[in-house]
Amino acid sequence: MMWGWNSGWAVLWMILSWVAIVAVIVLVVRALGGSSSTSRPRPDPRDILDERFARGELSEEEYRERRRILEETRR
Image (cartoon, rainbow, N blue to C red; front, side, top):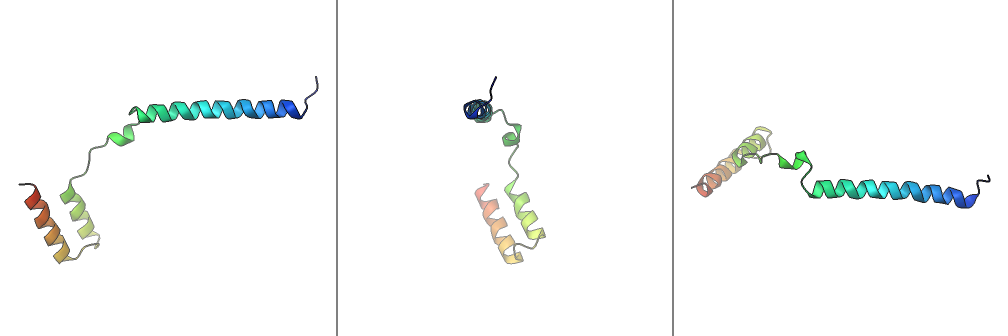
């Protein structure tokens, strides 16, 4: 049996076909909610604000203003 140029392309296409099938299956499972990483609860906005202030991303004035706005919107 001779392995020519054509049989090499056939093997390549077969491998690419299997890769495409697996990729489609993975995308369908993720789209249907099979990934548990997207089902995490959302963090509390005040906790995020506190963390940003603690890291020095916000001045005290910005922190107090944003905290006041968050408290007003929760009422």
